Image (cartoon, rainbow, N blue to C red):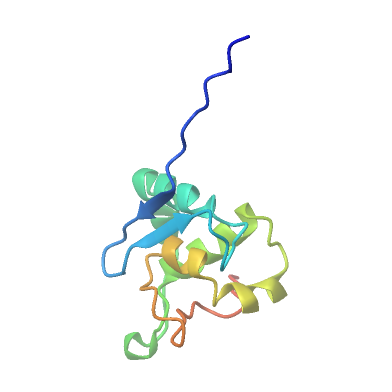
Length: 125
């Protein structure tokens, strides 16, 4: 009897983002996320520009010198959270430190002792 052919999977994958060090995904354990599919959602959104076009529907009345998070990033963060199953706003307090969400929003992923910080509890009226 012949042995079935085994498919060879790469040992690691690299995702490169401008202004950030590359993200290396492997199967060695360590910091694990169940939200890795968010990278695919964000890439589709970048190509189709769904959230960026939606963000243009809003007028930003905030003082520009006091803005840390653009309207577009606030919308992306909320929509991506909903897509990934985080309906409750209280979950966004933890998600604002999540490297996958930072990568999806195009934020710079910092060192471990300097985590990326997204907007807290995104609520859009």
